[in-house]
Amino acid sequence: MKEYQTITEISGPLVYAEVDEPVGYDEIVEIETPGGDTKRGQVLESEDGLVAIQVFEGTTGIDRNASVRFLGETLKMPVTEDLLGRVLDGSGQPIDGGPDIVPDERRDIVGAAINPVSREYPEEFIQTGVSSIDGMNTLVRGQKLPIFSASGLPHNDLALQIARQATVPEEDEASEDDEGSEFAVIFGAMGITQEEANEFMEDFERTGALERSVVFMNLADDPAVERTVTPRMALTTAEYLAFDKDYHVLVILTDMTNYCEALREIGAAREEVPGRRGYPGYMYTDLAQLYERAGRIEGRDGSVTQIPILTMPGDDDTHPIPDLTGYITEGQIYVDRDLHSQGIQPPVQVLPSLSRLMDDGIGEGLTREDHGDVSDQMYAAYAEGEDLRDLVNIVGREALSERDNKYLDFADRFEEEFVEQGYDTDRTIDETLEIGWDLLSTLPREELNRVGEDLIEEHYREDITGGDESAEEVSAD
Image 1 (cartoon, rainbow, N blue to C red):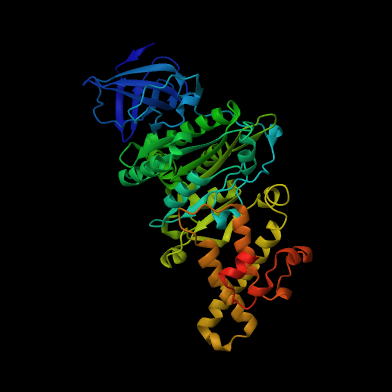
Image 2: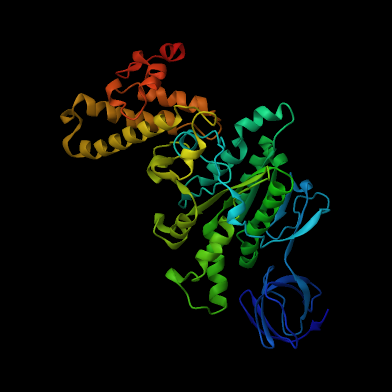
């Protein structure tokens, strides 16, 4: 292993050094500062005689007298089942005061792309316990379903609720006979504040969710370069647990906006030609490399499901980060500012939200045979109620027909009873659909034109029509 003392320039997170032999792209570097510290870095660019190194721990303390060692290998994540229950920093080092990790093996963090031919189509339902997701935008095992939020909205509370509550219903039944795969959560936090980190950890420890989780924490004051490594560490761990140890893994990555800002910062330090709004032109490819690591592989029991969270700058969903994310992923869940200001928890706006794989993950044998029809009918009724709200602002409620008033009431109750549930309520899919039928039964029977006649016979509550139901009547049904 050769050691060089040939640093020529230090620019932001980058160090440039002269070399007299070929150096590999992405190779890991150790830089020893004159003060005796050792920092790790990664080769970003390698030209004749000159390499650009991005330093994970930041370049403070490095000067021209520092020595540079090239280790001849790429960055690897030590993986083992014992990672469950552990808290690591953004570059995979334990920060929970526990013992050192003794890995089963070390995996390249770039991962291997899943061959499309060996991918299995995602179609098993994951129950998050959140009605607006389970009922209307169902999450399916192996899917990537981002949460589109904005600054100041409680996306972290929603993420924690999903991390705490998510289960695979048929696996629950199987686990009673000790069959089937276990469920694990990988939580990758990028650029979050110390306060947010404390909230996450308190919640994980309080609810016992930490036992089945691996947490990667990259804080806002950690170097931007480390932020680009964190999601890859998390996904490498997820792939190991899913495809080697047969776990069903849910990966929650927050906040992808901070990740993309780090890409932009490094791109600027490298003086690259910027793309849209200053982000690198390769950001689409870079995000796809992360998101496409979700999925299922034929012949393997495990799966990797992703919920990336991103805060849309300026609440703008045409911004490059949500825009590119929307192209790559299978839908999105919108967290809404208006619903949040009304005090609805979680404030998920159902109308612009979408799960493209929902139809394949619901129905008889997966959730319930009435799921698709109930979801379609509620969506249509809520959309009509929303349109009528705009009309009421102009002509007043008195000008509307009795039918229109029923749709207005439906929209209000949909938000107050179906979407609103608090962050500690865990609803089964049956409970979610029963609330749906309670709401649909406030509409006249002939209005339910998206539900099969046999399902209306079975589930419609005659005594609720007109909105005068009582608790006894509902429970009698």
